[in-house]
Length: 108
Image 1 (cartoon, rainbow, N blue to C red):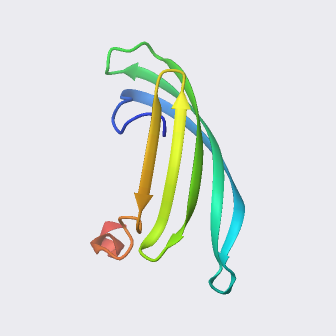
Image 2 (image 1 turned 180 degrees about the vertical axis):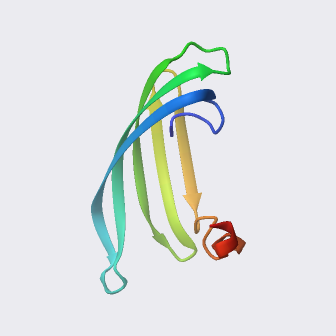
């Protein structure tokens, strides 16, 4: 859930639904097929047997993102909100598993 911090929601049982739509908003370098995207997402989760002393139930959130290529990797800028929390993020570079020891078949 992008509106919450990592490990903020803790439960023994849960379900999660996530829908994201992306739109191409600019063609940066046509020859290299590099484009800028904007996205919108809706998320829902059901949390049961919570370990953080919060009542069980469902939570919902929405998110907006902008993403595109840079010389050092993909950047992503986003914001998300729910009824009781919100989050903002900026990421730059390749995913952790790309070009690292995690590419080794032993870790897959």
